[in-house]
Amino acid sequence: AQEAPLIRELLRRSKTLPGVSQVALGDRASIPLDHVRTVAPVILEGRDTPGGLPPSIERSTVTAGYFHLMGISLLGGRLFNDSDDEKAPPVVVINESFAQTYFPNENPIGKRLKLFSPTLPWDTIVGVVANARTESLAEVAAPHIYANLFTLTAKDLAIFLRGRLDRSAIPVEVRRQGQAVNPEPPVFGAQPLNEGLSGSLSERRFSLVMFALFAVT
Figure 1 (cartoon, rainbow, N blue to C red):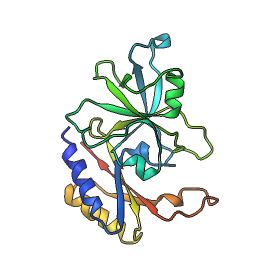
Figure 2 (figure 1 turned 60 degrees about the vertical axis):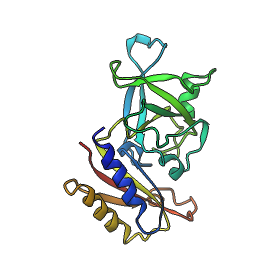
Figure 3 (figure 1 turned 90 degrees about the vertical axis):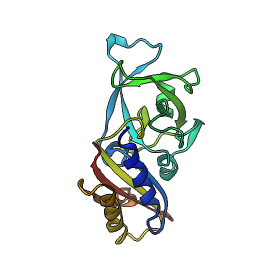
Figure 4 (figure 1 turned 30 degrees about the horizontal axis):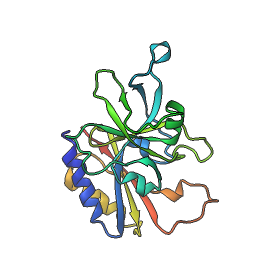
């Protein structure tokens, strides 16, 4: 995809920022507690769809480092890696709820599905991760698919940073690096994750800062 060099450069530059230990990119739907959901019709290979309509499943698009950065555990298979680039066959990771709902008595690893349209290539399921309550701490996790940002592009991006960060300086640095990659789109919306969490949750050793980024076209 033509956006792949941009994504790689954003990841590379973000890793050089002071105090940063982990970096990931994702779409708007991947931002925890942002109350923005993206759903996609999903066709499962070899499965009939009742009424002829495929189910609509929550979907996020992320880079490989997202799961470790967010503390989402791998339960089976593997996560995205560097070989899952724009030239490789498309792969997806599903959450435990998706596996239990659509593959209750079988191993989902290696199964295939299509997002959005039957004319698109098959995506192969390579991993199952733990459920993450990204929309509400009170809600039970719904079936969720994580697509690879290198093979399924996003209109809007978010940069996720974890580390011992200077909250006053890091937004300026991220904005500077983002505009060095592409000066036209805006970089805005820096927010520590723990500001969106319940006050009853204990403070973490590391801070996590998110930045809403620009349209990738």
